[in-house]
Image (cartoon, rainbow, N blue to C red; front, side, top):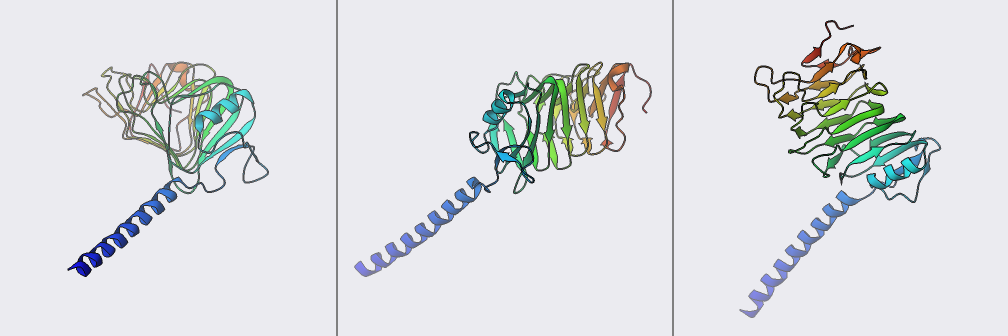
Length: 263
């Protein structure tokens, strides 16, 4: 009898050890850096210099550094990250790219603030390949706010999962020095609880701002208005699309407010 229990104990111990080792391997894989993640001055594929004082996958530290040291930077992310609100307010160009697969930047900040804000007319923020911006379900603001500066979205970037009680969409471009160029990527699966006639679940282009779309898609963004629940882009005002077009991409539903033709 003693030998039987002893044999069972050894068997269960081996099983436990195998499970524990497997769990550790999964944890290590999920948290492993590819060796290239971090903030770079310039292009890391060329002669870019890594900024060693900025920890890998720390977006807040990266934005703080770029704001204090204007220049051209690339931020490589090799894991999913949670972050509070981030603002680019220096005359810098910052490209955010995922490495080793699609990486999600999950917003976990105040419901009253955006995940990303551009607030410098000479700033450029590029959402590159392998990056998904994911919002929250009880937002009281947009996910991306361009007060001044240039937002660029490229193939392989995604903005999704934001539910807001405002009618100005998940991306709002607001001001004469505010630009959004969509070269590729997807804006999809966002929702506005506002039932206003001109509310948008996707992109809201305010008066005097500029939206250029040459690729990508803006589809499947909804609002609470029951007459027209599907609403991807709202263009507000005649001068909102000055020198702009949205040819080359795919949009499910556009409403131009006080504007009667499309180039």
